[in-house]
Image 1 (cartoon, helix red, strand yellow):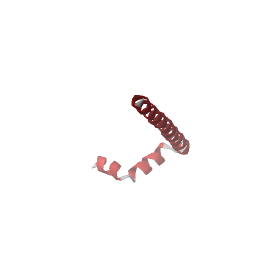
Image 2 (cartoon, helix red, strand yellow):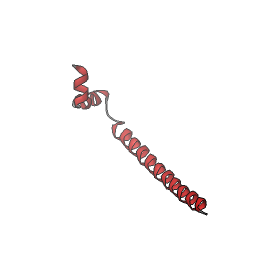
Image 3 (tube, rainbow, N blue to C red):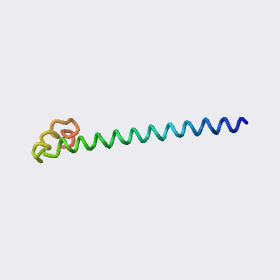
Image 4 (cartoon, rainbow, N blue to C red):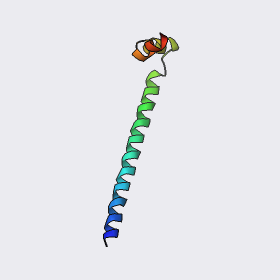
Length: 62
């Protein structure tokens, strides 16, 4: 009987984890789509200028 209860609890936890993972993946995918849409019309020069303002980009140049 204890085994059955433990199995059901584990099954519920795994199910919740899968739902949470699917939701997080969906949110991430949506964010990437929006980011790509916002930079779609941006020229290479604009992207380079934006990257130049990032601290890590400046460190790589030195």
